[in-house]
Image (cartoon, rainbow, N blue to C red; front, top):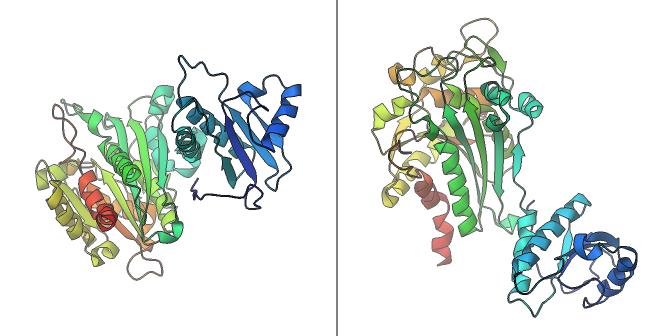
Length: 441
């Protein structure tokens, strides 16, 4: 949950609905009042209090005391991490108790250096909630295009797909000037599905997750830099495109999260399906965000490799992003960081190629041939993503225009036996994150 830190000098403040206390001593002995009296009384009727803690009433405006002990500490082997672990558990227990505005009471402990700081960091870890959507019924209802790709893999529990949401919000939300939002393709292995990859073309498909990996890498840079004016959101669409008795097949019509009816033309064009529903979800979040810019990042097409050559990512802007020259700015940022980009335009032909052709469908996910032998084979998928997610309702002439850019990193991500490159993390960080650092310095 987003949280704002401040030092509270008044324990009787009415701004909080729970007090979290971490302690490394026996309950009711060394804590300051009024905690000492409450804990001493509770310990008389609960011998496990000093080990598992409790939620207790307290005569303060916050009304609840969430007591999270470290348990007995053996000074020969225990260290300050025990306080961080207890703080994390305390925060999670407070959230389960319904606390939304906690006050954290930090106690010193002469046995350990920096105990207050480590305790606070442990508490913040407890506030960080990574949302993982893995329930098959939820995926089917909320992310139906993702679910159809996941169908064959879901028969084996360890292969079942999930969508992971990561969010960073600056300490002061009022300072946010820009929101960058990512959807990453995380196909952990791509067999091609029912339209199976043959003649050795499956080799290297463990790298088909590099789009989601790049998004996670960008979020790690965000975590390190903690930019004060940029909010960042990433949806990692992690799935295996397996083949088997429950595979999805060509000719199926799936209704996307956006309500668009999608006919399957080729099961090996799974990456755009995996991302489209999450992109729709991110689009809805963007409508309530400050100055949002949405990106999809994917090792999507062989056509991109044929177009740009190895080592170059390709950026494609929708009309709204093109108005602010996003692709050109990203290209300039990448040039300075050794993370180069080429630029392609999304044209009307890319949309018409994906228009529905038969009764019962609105759009087609792909032609029957691979992207490498299809005209405009790397631009077309970006048009599909716009149509399938409902972003086509948010163009330059709409009341709610949204900037969207598609980054095809198939040429730049790195193929076996070469190591993954991390593209386009550096270019994105230069464009969106380094500005705050440069201004601060």
